[in-house]
Length: 205
Image 1 (cartoon, rainbow, N blue to C red):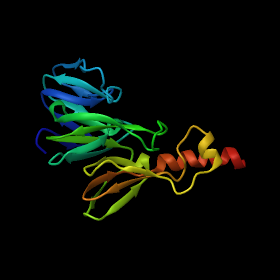
Image 2: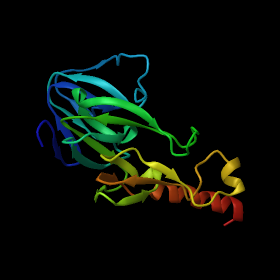
Image 3: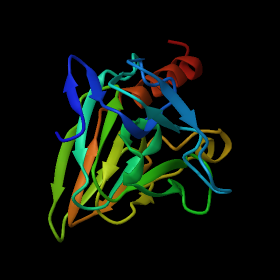
């Protein structure tokens, strides 16, 4: 892994300019200086900071202990809030991904990387799924980590009256990816927990 070493739950980097999730690095030698991210429209500014380190630094997120190294031989789109660290020069763009067409409900920001590599931090282990030319993959929005294929499309087989009223994503909403390409996903336990809480409130158990 050129430029990064993953060991003991930490991603270790050297001196340079990096895109890091907020509250990173966890520890560093020398100095770690935050630089302004220039531009009027920087959709991933809220999730990623530009940090310049003078020596080695270690990155880790206590709430997201599983790290995945993703090489960017092809263009990779990664959920910005799940990126732990990447070389600053690897970033190409960032855009909002709308889970529900023509609606901001459930939308999330994805950062595009065109070279080098990135390291993601997730709540569960990450699976790498290779899609052939005619393959399609449906995944829960909260499970998506990164992808190399074209932008996914939202799909909901059934909408209820509560789905239209409550400020949440429909329980059966999915994102569909089309091959060829690679999709990285994590577990969707977070959404299941939210559904469980909602059921207890509605049905009283």
